[in-house]
Image (tube, rainbow, N blue to C red; front, top):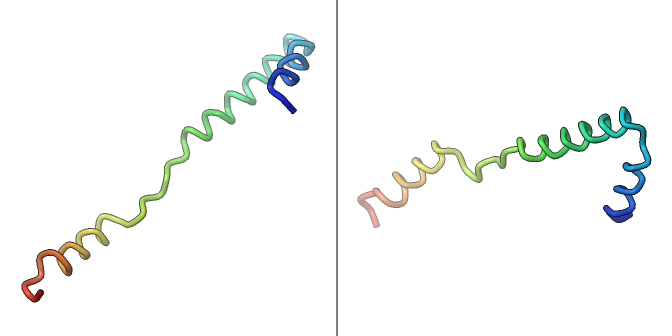
Length: 59
């Protein structure tokens, strides 16, 4: 289904139903923006790696 098709169907809705649809779509968009990506490693893991591999005296 194309966005243009959905738009035409949405225009045919009553005003009340159109606003319901609008808020549902808006909520879906906001939910996707809120999701944060999980860091690859934690700060503690990064510090441990640096101490072990970069600042070690034995090379």
